[in-house]
Length: 272
Image (cartoon, rainbow, N blue to C red; front, side, top):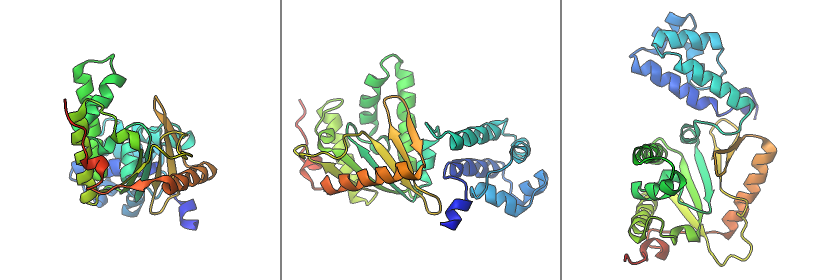
């Protein structure tokens, strides 16, 4: 516990990773960059590992040395603001990839990081009916990048609980749903995700408060993201996280695990 309290919140993990990538892209060793900005190698390691909150003056020197054109300074300011007022955080995907374990409850749709491209498009088109096809495809591309990061070898241990209706609703048509269900079966078979559903006949549904994500980290306190129609709310408050943990436990009590052979994944609705 002492180690956790001494570290910045997990929101600094994406910033540290961004700084490391910027240095790697320039082909500089940590020692070379440290010398050019006037700090020790150990100090830069602390920043890249998110073991400290760097001073703006240091970030400005690193930004200049790496030719980052103020992007690192902007990311530093956003992270500092988000840590002080942790509502919606723009790096939710990257924050999730730094978690050791990610648990998510989704009552309406398959999570973005488990979607096929066609299912993603079928979800996004009605939500963004005011934008053109090019913008929709850009959003789909973002979700596919999210999926690659979250389900890749460096992603967290994934546990997802859906309402049964999510896997029965033919969003985009029966063929789109068939392919989405088959994709989920493949992910389960590969050990990439553990998936469960809350049956429709559950008399006391414990997850009616809405969709939320719990992220557990190796050396930081857990964080919760509550989804909303527009954006969401991120919190690391111990009381809020504790409440969500109780809801999670109740959902786990009510859910049924799926296997690749489960009827919901293999008993596809017939295409018209």
